[in-house]
Amino acid sequence: MMKVALTAVLALGLAACGGDKTANNAAETNAENAALTDVNGATNDTTANLDTALNATGNAVENAGNAVENAGNAVENAADNAH
Image 1 (tube, rainbow, N blue to C red):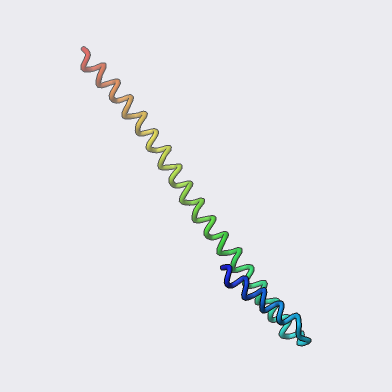
Image 2 (image 1 turned 60 degrees about the horizontal axis):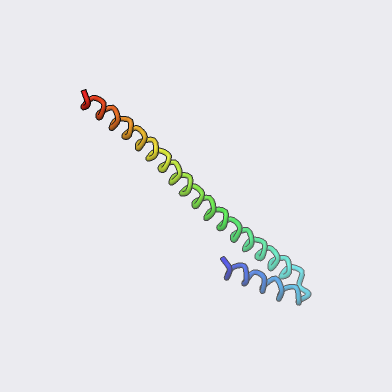
């Protein structure tokens, strides 16, 4: 993403030096599109990371619930075996 953004900035800077408004507008549009691509990529990466973290948290909670249930069963079994 950094390469795309750097290329866009350089293209925008070079276009600004010339007097061709069409080229300047095209360079500006390309720079804006590159910036949006960077932002969208970062957003997608962040969303994927958050989804992964949320799933991991859900799994940890479920595992903790299972551990509590297993502990309860162990206590119940111990009580049954004590009689």
